[in-house]
Image 1 (cartoon, helix red, strand yellow):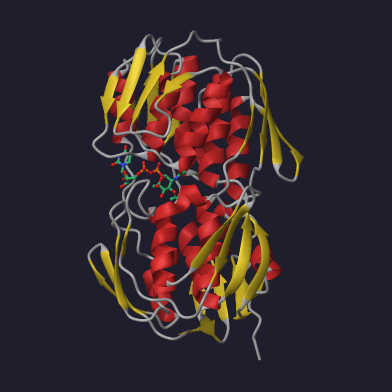
Image 2 (cartoon, protein in one colour):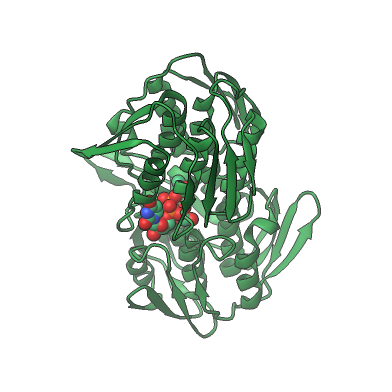
Length: 432
Ligand code: EPU
């Protein structure tokens, strides 16, 4: 008989996710907008006055925190309906980002480019977000300095000043998502042309650039590794409306769920083109995909997965955010495989939790060697970050018995009703 469990921390009941049976999964799921796009779109709105309507906004905690951040700077942010947000600003804004909010969200650093571009200054504490090792911002800083900004760091707080940024040629040694986004936004009002060589090409970076173009920015090379931004006068940008690109990592979470629990589901709004390399690895593992032209993607399982080696790379490679899901899938595949992390060497914390569920995983520096077992075995585990939490849910679907996951707050930061969506396709999962 399944047991019920609610963790009590400091006298307050913390929710847990409980999975007690699984598969086959069938039906339809709608993939919400991408966390890693919407947070940057929200930051970008400070570049202009007016009303911005964002649609396909996921109902996640990180959007709440970014809304609070914008409000603390003087914006009005209000939900219009369950998945749209109206943001309004007029005139001057504060450029001092409250530390307690900045510290809760990695994407708070995305206020750097737009606030410095428009108001010539920012004061912000180092960003928070998931803890998977060192997450430096040196590329953001050196890019701003190349554009003429003065950056000063003291007591955990970064202060940047620039009366007018000037165009520069910036060459990245690594295609950082956040640095690309910040420097594109910084260059919007800069004097002359800025080029960014080695820019990140993730679908969320493309989504941000399209939004900026709709606002009146001049950006060429969108989706390519060299971006050229020609500065326009401050005040030349207008407000715009935008539909957030669907979340490829949430879509991948549903793919992984079908992979371990069996079945066939239609993922409405999933964009095949945005997740090509991940889908290729999944196809090699034995999953079948059918494009539902104009509406999404169907995924079907045809039995136990086959083990396949995977390594994470910047887009268009297999994203680091898919990796915990891939390791959960390989834990029940037929054979052994090695998963190599090339972006965040410390992003393996959840492996111990998967091992607690019975997975056979051995770590060799930034390589995980996984030997698949027919099934995992349910127990109590803890999510330490968003994607790790999703991987534990997938592992719970691959386990016999009851899996209880605490640390659900991490999952809520990036997943819009993961439990409800999985229940909707037949998973035995609930939130207690
Ligand atoms: N890096 C530097 N210096 C910098 C910037 C980055 O050395 O100035 C290094 C990082 O330490 C890391 C690598 O470059 O090793 C990648 O960092 P990147 O800047 O590309 O990542 P990010 O912008 O901080 C975003 C997503 C992450 C996702 C990565 C990689 C957001 C809010 N976060 O982070 O998403 O893993 O890109 O694709 O967009 C998640 O959603 O769970 C998540 C962690």
